[in-house]
Image 1 (cartoon, rainbow, N blue to C red):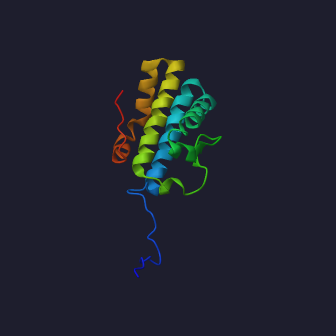
Image 2 (cartoon, rainbow, N blue to C red):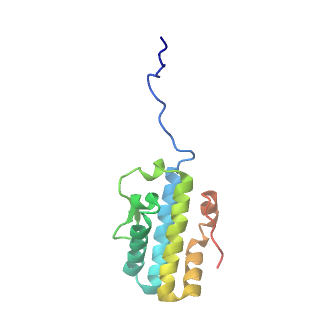
Image 3 (cartoon, rainbow, N blue to C red):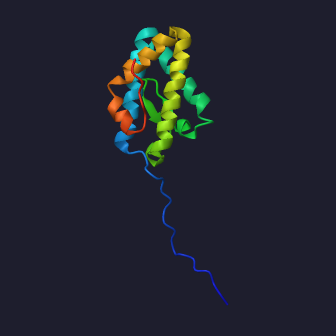
Length: 141
């Protein structure tokens, strides 16, 4: 009579290369800076609302974007504290690229495509190296 051996405890499931707290802090800072820069052109509330709409519209396709919201002061916040650092760095980077790309597309409706592209590029420029370490390429203006 053979019996299957069942381990007493399964090792915890861990995601390959999870986002680190400093990487999450960087993304929060980048989004805040972006909203501040865009807000100077057509209003902070309008910029925040555009980003909120992007998060709402994209979160179904990219669940990682459903884990965050933009608070009333323009900061990206987790819905449940500590959840972003349990996510795959790659998935977060992909979500961030979609977030910024869609944000730029929507800003282009108000500013024109060229102006929106330049504005986003300038806002992200100072974070270019850190974002590249996350796998996010920033196009130059």
